[in-house]
Amino acid sequence: MTHVKRAVLALALLVHLAALYVPRVPGDGPDLFPGADKVAHVGVFALVVVAALWAGLPARWVVPLALVHAVLSEVLQGALLPGREGDPWDALADVAGVGLGWAAAVLVTRAGRRPSGPAR
Image (cartoon, rainbow, N blue to C red; front, side):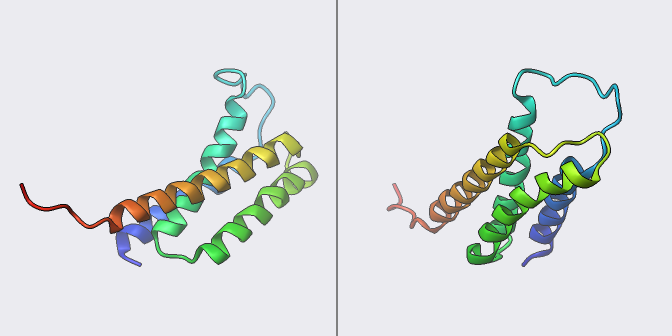
């Protein structure tokens, strides 16, 4: 992995873990729009999966681990974190994010492999 790819992956993991595990305090305020929480769940899982795959980690490890973490994070939120709740709909959004991140990484990888056409 290059240093840039490692840095991007580290940043993605930091954002991912902060979004999932920082306790909430009463009065954090409402979501920006209805469903914003679900969009955030999709986004943080897609971000870390695409970053990991772009960094060259194998999908056979990244995708299953991300799927396990999708469920486990909701259990941990509900059991251990003040102001947080485990939500099966959040877990479903997390799983959708894993799929979206995996698909995005596949598309980016395929686009990078395409041979350039003849010079005009």
